[in-house]
Image 1 (cartoon, rainbow, N blue to C red):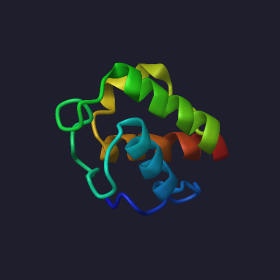
Image 2: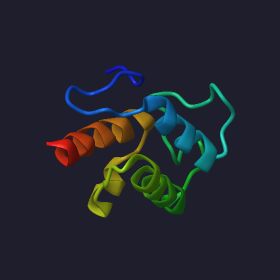
Image 3: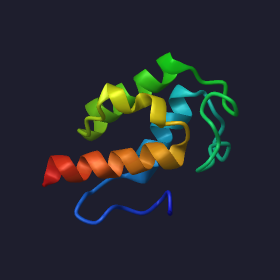
Length: 91
């Protein structure tokens, strides 16, 4: 899965998503990878992820249910959830 592409039928700005994650986890440009673990590799915590999801909702208009949070362990999984819920919102 490419972390810079867009899902069919959904207009998701992956660079914006990447920027939100980098800013909230206080990472350097280029440090975020598709499979780096938010907690183990980037020292994030549950509050960081809640803030990321809240910003995605506010800035991108994509609502990810709080029940999904435990499954969002890296950028690849977060991007997949954003794609999935963006498609639902635009269906």
